[in-house]
Length: 92
Image (cartoon, rainbow, N blue to C red; front, side, top):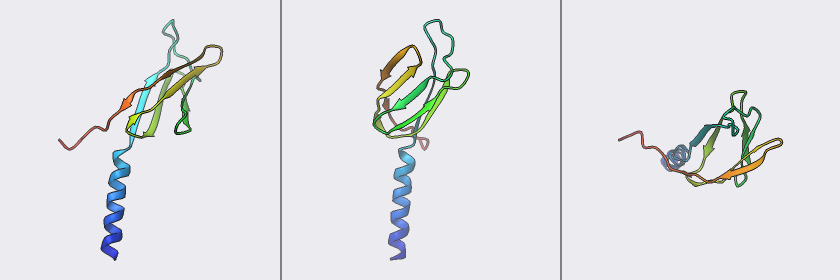
């Protein structure tokens, strides 16, 4: 029984580690200046973040596949983007 539990934990942890994608980026306006405080949101996951003073952001722990990302800034409305996330194989 103990071996079965250990095997299940190992399989689950490998699955969780496999789905740990991240997106990083920089939000800028039409004049190429950063938009500090812009919001970045993934509605399907109810997960979001805010750009720093340089417009940089990072979203962690995203699943594989397509995710819809919404960007918004006060007074500018919002835009949406749908990238496809794929895991990187570090063990080649």
